[in-house]
Length: 360
Image 1 (tube, rainbow, N blue to C red):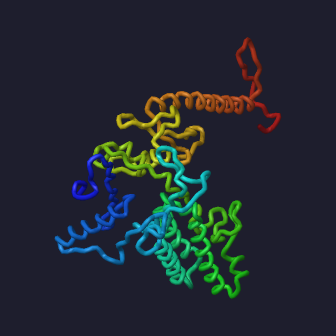
Image 2: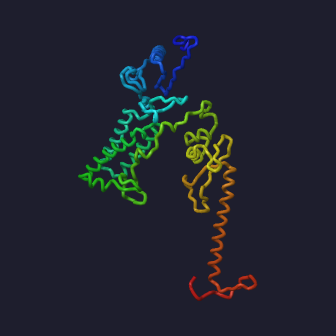
Image 3: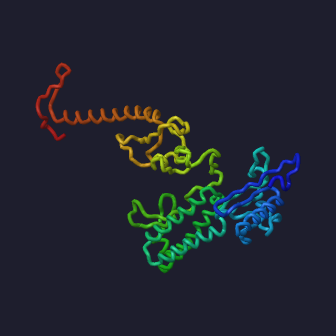
């Protein structure tokens, strides 16, 4: 392809970038003519196997200048995401690898179609639970909200305010649901919304005030397109590097679930020595506060350490445990001795009898 067009001696020709997922793909290049020729080549190849590009789903577009797009609209949708570049000043603009100011920022956000489909799904759940208790609607909505926001965790949905918008639209639907059940919205707010922590507008049950069932907010989940780290070119899920893939995914068939989750939470680093875990390292789960010192067996109290780091920490923990055990033992002796009359004779405690002067 390089030699059939645009390839001239002494001219640097950049190869088009192709991103594909199943039968969806995007071809990227700075030259519009190259992209147009790529479309022709793809159409010819598909024709040979009895297929064709779907016209309504095929666009030749520019991500920044709308006048360079076939339909006059900048940006494109791909796998539920909308990718577009927006103008930015020199202090907020992105820079290229050479440090040159580009004059724009690239945002990856949920597409309009995906956002509408999500709200339609929430609407159907709320309508289904017109006569159900509040707990039922919360139990059905939470997985939908958590799943949708997790899908866009590597996007700029939070930066552009899309998550706040989704929370507002969800609130309007729940507001209508509450008004229908109570007759007026003031009673609905009092009955179905409450204060938890510093948030005064939480859609939550009032049963079991110690641990109410509450609706998740879209805005609770962190999103950023810059948090994504590309997979290393020499890595494969089948290469046996359980540490690398557990750190990325938080799960691996050859790694215990607890260790895999801790690897992801710790971003592949040992909190004791600060070094990255390697494939050949022996990893051990440690309780930050030992169970012997009333530490709980929960993720908040767990960490993954190198075996030698774990040995160092355990040695320090044992000192504290012995101090506690000694203090407890001395307390028991003191309680026992207080029940008797005794005195020191030649540095030896001599018991004189049971102390009946008071209650101990």
